[in-house]
Image (cartoon, rainbow, N blue to C red; front, side, top):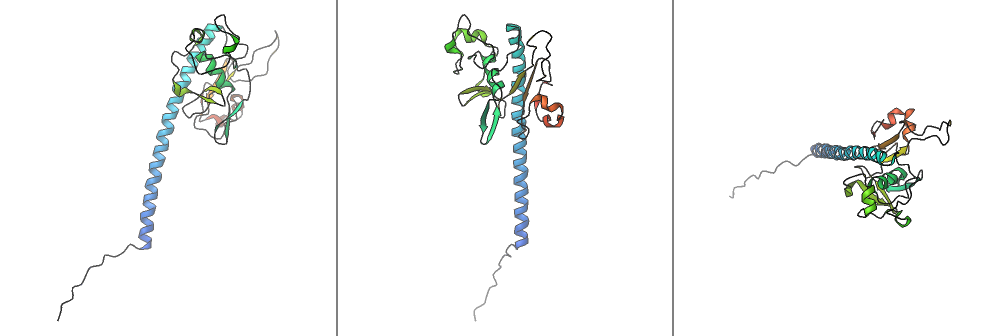
Length: 220
């Protein structure tokens, strides 16, 4: 008579145990992604803050050189930066030209100098010319702080979005008080940073909506 050996069959996972394992894996994945997102946003914000400070210093140099701060030649020039998301690039285009010296058609009242001509009014991404080097306010212009959208050269923050810049209104005639367009008496400069909600608000709008600009990097 042959002896029969009993074989051990490991118990299979129950449905409940499988659900517990899946839940734990999902939680770990969520924590990992959350940490990654936080680290990425922190890095982008640091880049934004560094660029922000460089812009402020360069604007002061521009003011010393020309006796005034640059003013955007246009207003509310909306360009799609992210899919389905448009931003006003008028200030960012003005900043690009004012700080790099590459063109001047985005700066209100700017004209060709003795060493340049009207053909160089538009930006072309090149800053090697004698006239452009003379007008360059940023000693170094890394490729990471500017981009081209719809043939428009703009200064961008660490999130790839255009910096917002508005020069304070000045009286057109003696005795006339212009309507305030900025919070500061010189200029307002800000980045929407990681804020994806309040990206159509101007600086002056935050006087009544202070909480709207909590995430912004700003000079007021």
